[in-house]
Image 1 (cartoon, helix red, strand yellow):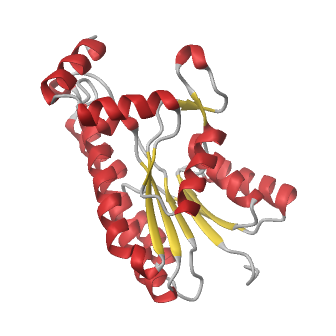
Image 2 (cartoon, one colour; image 1 turned 60 degrees about the horizontal axis):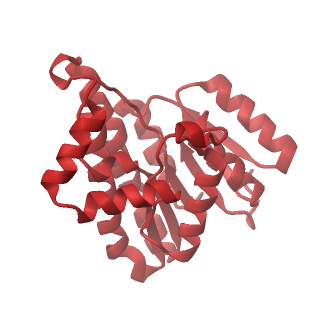
Image 3 (spheres, helix red, strand yellow; image 1 turned 90 degrees about the vertical axis):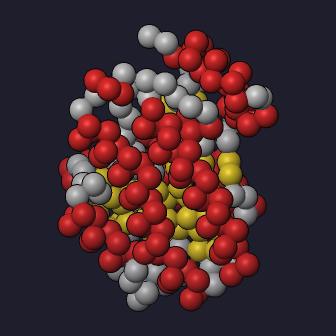
Length: 251
């Protein structure tokens, strides 16, 4: 049972990577958790680990968020005003790559559903409760890939371009009511940093993201290299951005 003096965070894609890092960091900071992912066994193991390490109360909601029936259980949990969620972390995502014309269309549509549509639905589910309470935070884990066209990852980059823009717009709508929405735009991320491969540390990404939430910032781009890439994508002529992206991603 939730302790009344402990905030609750719901994290999707919580079984691995950035999602797991969010769950562990939020537990360390005194949050109880609702964790969502397809793998029940990994979620159960995470819940047991967090209970041992931090006395965290963790609800496990296994399910495929691209399945509307299974996603409905998460939406209902977020809309439950009797058990309010203080922080929603929309982290679940998918990645496909290759020539768009040769990729199975079902996989591309499912990727757009998970990376863009699901965060919209979950954000819409939790916002009424947050607005009624006058507090709350949403983190939408987007990607630096959404800052420029991404050939051979066309739907991936496009979905996250949408998610970043959506997050900023909703942030502007709700911030006056005490609620914030932050788009977190990491680059390649792993359990440990690897500068040689330009891979970020998941824990550092999460800490930067939560610092942005605390500061009420609508966008967080962790890492100097990512900030430079984003500035180039936003400020350079679009023709130059397209040329650079085409040259860098041509297989």
